[in-house]
Length: 209
Image (cartoon, rainbow, N blue to C red):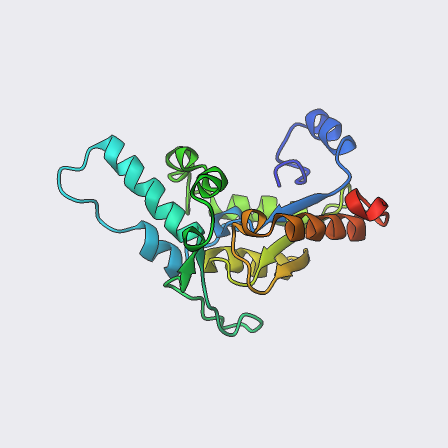
């Protein structure tokens, strides 16, 4: 999104980057990328108190586990297509129920969570909303959003925000969650190739065969 926005990077750096990119797909961006307030599914999963005498290292581990459970959940939502959506708060199941343990760990990259979790859920929200809008409205490189029907509500709120800004939005699967690429790698790849093909007007990947 930073590369797509015409004001986020120095002009020359952006020019070089855009020249090397034929299309951009935001796969399930979080709500904070659009300056949105966290939804209840996120706050319920992440904002609980830590046990007494929890060390900073232990807090990082707890935060990573909370995030992993939240992002790997499957949620049931209601009224997604209208102005008063009801996002599911408690997951109906988790990726851990079916994914191989090692594959799940690689998909989640839990070591990265403590590094990124505290970066501004609300700080500079208006500025990030502006960057998102600029990224969607620019004409230098086509951009789209891809998502799945059972992903977390905070992500769905971002999808709706992007659509309201004019982004092209594609649903890969009604039943998938944020780890769809691990659950259904072939379908994920096929879906992404179809989106890029639609964006640039010529087949890519397996569609070229």
